[in-house]
Amino acid sequence: MKRLIIALVIAGGLFSTAEAQFRLSINIGTQPVWGPTGYDHADYYYLPDIDTYYSIPERVYIYRSGRSWKRSANLPDQYRDFDVYKAHKVVLNNVRNPYNNDKMYRRQYANYKGKYDQTPIRDSKEQRYFENKDHPRHSEWKQNNNNRDNDKNNHNRHHGKG
Image (cartoon, rainbow, N blue to C red; front, top):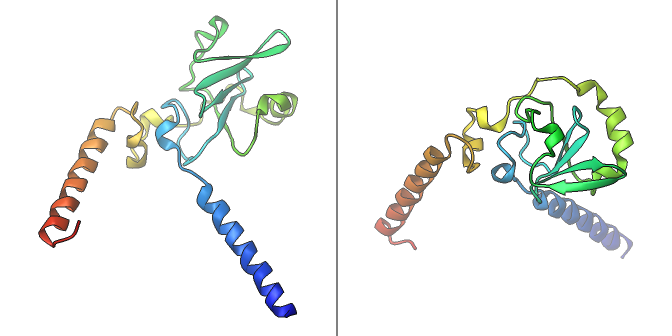
């Protein structure tokens, strides 16, 4: 009986691990095209140059205004000349409201200020980024996927499937 309980606990642990890995979503298509390449998933970007966060699911910048944090679809006027395509972005995942730990992030990523060392999604030539509707080659990706879907449907009809 003891072995059975241990086996069930181990199996439950494996299932939980597999389930957690399955829940990891890919959100390349919803990341802004100024975001950095190399990440299948991102929740927030931290912009060390201007101590600002960007929430990918909400599509808003989160920046300090006085003693509070403001949210806006656009950067405030004081950053109108800031180039999000060139600036370094730190990807933050599995963190809720990272701005609540702003001092830690400011200290931890201060050495990334002024670095222009990332390729933005917009400039990527990797096909996986073409699914982003704002990527310059999105229409090419969409056309290729439509052709693949049509080929698959024709194949299935021809072979009596679907």
